[in-house]
Image 1 (cartoon, helix red, strand yellow):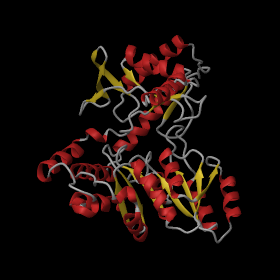
Image 2 (image 1 turned 30 degrees about the vertical axis):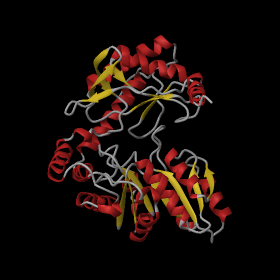
Image 3 (image 1 turned 45 degrees about the vertical axis):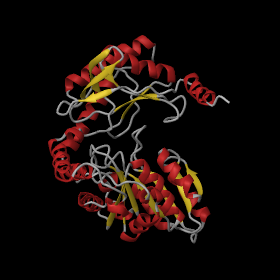
Length: 409
C-alpha cells in the first residue's frame, strides 16, 4: 500500500482551494524592526514586515534581550523538566507572580503557548464542573474551540458579540445549571472588541462563570497593559483571564490568571500543563522584563495607536478597502483567495513589503484579506510607501477601490 497517496491527495485539495500555505523565510534584525532579511529563492533581500504579532516591537527591546541573555548566562538555557520534576525554576515563579499582579488576580499559571493555555485550560476547567454548559462566541479562536471540544461538555454557540442571543441561551439553561461563557476580548482578524462589561452583567445575572481570551490585547490596552478588561474596568469581574507572552510581550508562552483555587485545580489536573517541559528560564526572565516595562511605560501603547490610526487614515484616503474597527488591527478586504495570495506575493517580490494573506479557514470564504499590524516603529515614510505599493497592486489585480474621501486625517 502506498500511504503517501493520502498525504499527496490532502495537499492537492489545499492547492485546489487556493489555501495552501507558503512560509516566508525571514530573519529579523534586532534594533531595526520592522526591517528584516527575506531569504528568497533568489537570495537575501531587505523587506519591511507589516503583519507581525510582535505588536509593540518588544522582541527587540534592550531590557527584554538583556534579561534573556543575562539569565541564559547565569542559569543556562532549558528548564530541565516538567513543572513537577525539576522544572519549576525561580524565573518562572517570578513571571507567574508578575502576571497575577498584571491582572489583579490571586494567581497565574504558565503554559508553553497561548494555544495550549486555551486548549488545555478550557477543557480542564469545564471537566471539573459537573454538567457544565459552555457558551462560546461564534468567532472564538481555534484553540478555544479545541478546548471546548476536548472538554466533552455540552456547548452552544452564541452569535458573535450578540448579547441578546447570549441572554437567550443563559435563560434557556436555567439558573441552577453551571455555565461557562467563553469569548475573546479583541478578535484579531476583524479587530472588533467584545462588550465585556455587558457580558459580565449577564454572567452575574444568570450565575455563569466567565473566561476571556486577551491574547491580542494584553500589553496594548489598559493603564498597565492588562488588556481590554483593564481598560474597561472589569478585570475583577472576569473569573479567568487568558493571555500570551508571544505577541505584545515579544516572547513565548501562554497563561491563565484567576482565583487561587481555580489555578491550583488546573495545575493539578491539566494534561497539557502536567506532561510537558516548563518554559526555559531565559524566556521567563525576558517576558517578566517586558511586562514590567509595559506596566510603567505608556509610550509604546500611545505610539502604537497613533501608527494604527495613521495607517487607516492614509489607506482610507487612497480609497483602499479598510475594514473598519477601533483597534490596532488594519484588515484590508480582498474577498478572493487567489487574488489575496497574488497581492501578498506582489507586495513581497516587487515592493519588499511582507503581509501574509489571510484565507479560509482562518477567515470565512469570501472574506479573504490582508491583515496589517502597524507597530510603534513604522514611520510615516514606511506608511506612505505601503499605501503606494498597495495601490499599484490593487490596480494590477483589478481589485476594487472605494470612493476617496476629501482628505485624510
